[in-house]
Image (cartoon, rainbow, N blue to C red):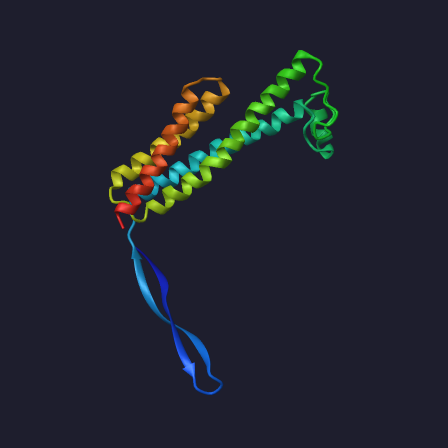
Length: 192
């Protein structure tokens, strides 16, 4: 069990007879709140967080790699680009010529991975925030664990569906991930 110290504070207003003004004081007394966490729920939530962090690192790294092919890296990365033999000047994409099929395919792939990373940034942090918040008050540990697993699998599935251009698979994974987060939040509220 983890103990957290919380200050229980209340405002006290007094009327000052001298000068006719009100004085406010903040009165605080220390209390203890005990947070109890099921070890298996904590473990699954941590494993899920690590898995999604690795997934995000992988997709973000691949986006960085693809940007070498479109010249969309900073000029100081030119030496790395030459070592990779991309044949493209790194100018933040300012001078990228899309007249060839190969160049258009590289730009298309870059845009696809930008969207994947952007979607992850919009959904994973808030999802993990709610999952971590609900782990402390979950009414059902099994439901919490199921929500964490569904969220992680749905986010990984969403990325794979996005890479492989699969619809409605991508939408189903997105909705499953969102539903699992909302259910985890409700589970946490019911446990309070």
